[in-house]
Figure 1 (cartoon, rainbow, N blue to C red):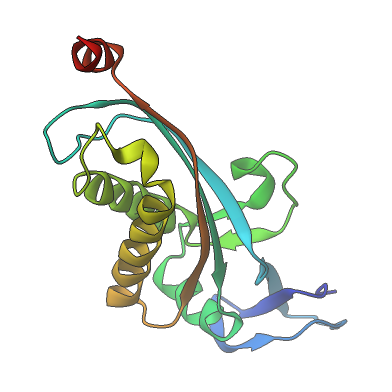
Figure 2: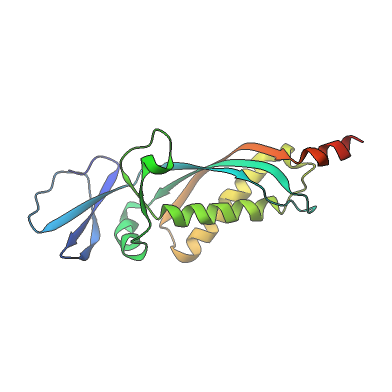
Amino acid sequence: QIDTGNVGVERTLGKVGTDALPPGVYFTLFKTVDEFTAKEVSFQLNDMTPKSRDNLTMKDVDIDIYFKVMPASIPGLYTKYQGDVVKHKEVARDGTSDLVMAYNRVSREARESVYKSVAQLDATTMHTKRAELAEMVRATLQAELDANDKGAFLITAVNVRNLLTDPAIEAAIRQ
């Protein structure tokens, strides 16, 4: 059984099918059907310490990333990123037991996008540009993912939860 919002990928004696199976009930004898989520998935990037444009290291940057994998892309991604499959509950609190395709690839690219985006802003004014930072991260991440897998991933939202500069920098600014 494949639930609403998920798709199935059929395997027959090790060969992966090319079409995503829509939600429904399937009876198989010699085939295995793996169920992947096509719903929005979220994960957190916590305790990052990127450098800003003025070469100051941020003390703590926490960001939430929300993304979807396009249903038609899942069989191809399953073949391409076969070892990169996790259960949603392993990466998100209160997650489901649905399988998430290419999670590690997306999270690595997301971390890199955060570092690139923070490097374009000054540490002293970054806290006033949270929305701009979130959009820069989203656009950079979407471009990176599209470079290798055009149209397979959709970054739906980025939320900047925490943005702290180094306390020594704040003290120097106050002085």
